[in-house]
Image (cartoon, rainbow, N blue to C red; front, top):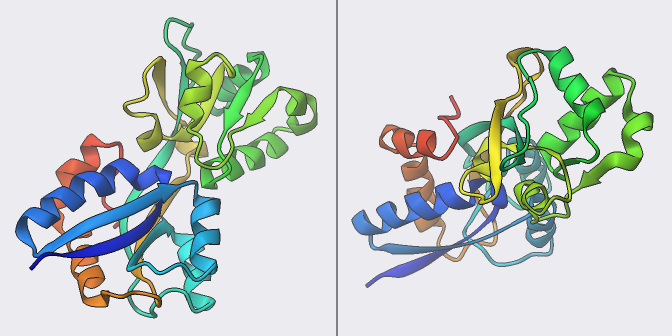
Length: 230
């Protein structure tokens, strides 16, 4: 008899979890249904006491949730990590981004700059502060609402330059990925899975997490703009 594992995740891992859940269900007596949304909303849903088996969010958020009693201690495992990339609307000029100064100048030249409410957006804000341009570009920045991909805003022409996890740009029509941030200003977000303390099927959640970290899933992670967490 097939039982269902319920999950909550951020949008950044939506495609990865969908792909790996299918292959997991082919080998195990479990089906998987994961609800993906903006990370802020996902954490809020967990904190509301929503019944779910597995939670997949950025590692810092998962640590907070465990400390608050929403994640079973000792069950957190890093499943993948992803860096920040830059995108423009299809057909638009691709700015130079080889160096930190290149990226800064691309931001200064853009009419509208978009980033997410998640970890990548927080990183961009810190860069703007470091470059001492936060105030001068404030009127030209567009923070995507939770659950709204930055790529969609870029594709619709609501932003000229978009910054988000590479995994979230893949598969978005109407954009071109210019490339990742230069190594000296790159940030890698680790996405972690853990068993919810509200789980109806903690055994199924543990089995799914074990599969998500298995070496055989590495190829799928690479195809979707991610890599193993360790």
